Image (cartoon, rainbow, N blue to C red; front, side):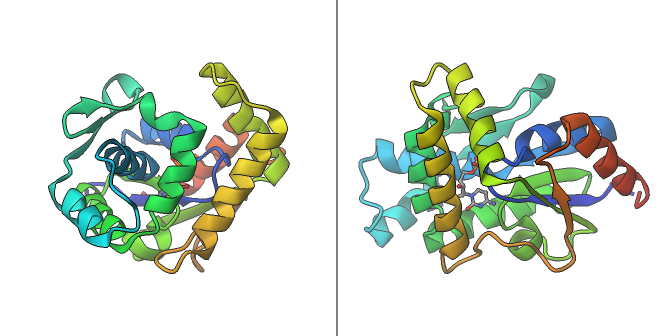
Length: 222
Ligand code: C5P
């Protein structure tokens, strides 16, 4: 009665955030950007000057971290311990830092608990890397959204330039590829396609085409 749990996983730059936001809007669901949560934790680790290798310190930070997502007006704002970190967590440095921090067990455990709590009643679109494999392995509907590394690099590049970052296309493609390798090769909840996930290649399709296809599939299940 409350709606589906929809998982959208995939590598960075495949269009997950845009698609998740628009799909959630069309269905009247809540969007949960789990990457933003990991970014917020990485921000706090950096701000506190904690060495990511110091497991006890990372664990202490996670147990007291207050991470909030506010989706009002269809624009996401992210708060870490009351601080608005929405823009601060989107730099290329924070992306790589997040990929390192998100591999740590206490970080994954605390964020997974939070994500399950937020999503358990359904009517949600969760996007991330491990939603269909680890957070909600029984989700009613799972998508794996991907695109070629060149295409993903180009999209991320346009986004970063739009945010005023000084980057080149080559280094952006490099960074995206490196982050995906790191996310796919970690021990805990690595990025991979769940066996029952529907693969969606966004390389040669417009946002609308991808969205229409996913909405049709979702409506067929509601
Ligand atoms: O999706 P986004 O690029 O914002 O995610 C940032 C990083 O957070 C990813 O590169 C990944 O290391 C981590 N992440 C994760 N599990 C998720 C979502 C994000 O490990 N479910």
